Image (cartoon, rainbow, N blue to C red; front, top):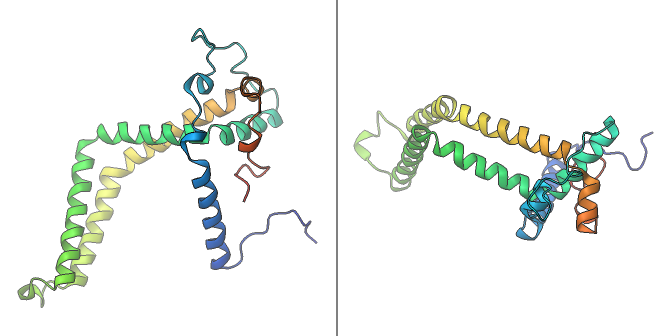
Length: 197
């Protein structure tokens, strides 16, 4: 028999939907400007804009590593999301052809929706039906995603993941507690590594 506190996997689609909505609601409450930590605290800088000697520590054990990552992910979550957004902006601006192709595909979908709603043009109807246009647009969309968007998206996720995990692993949680005075207890994640659901 499973203990009372163990995590039960969701059994129905309603349970999954409820769990996802709960997580999204908690993340929305966490991702606010009030939870955005100042840059000196995030980077571990002293008032002289030098790196603090206690800001970054290599964890001595797997338990200390997990504790560091869990505390930092909970405390700096808004900062990590901001890094993700800025990284996505920089990488997407460095791929103008991807932006052009995404704009063209969006425009084609918009025109398709207008023609379906207004039932235009009737002269093409026997040969080019709305269903066939939808199929062609789906193929074009998948092609554009795989050929133009996949590599920039993987670069965004990879760079952001590396920077986030390097910071969350090395940033000393004890140093943060001493500087904030509250220890970030209200922002701490639970044992599962996720914000309490």
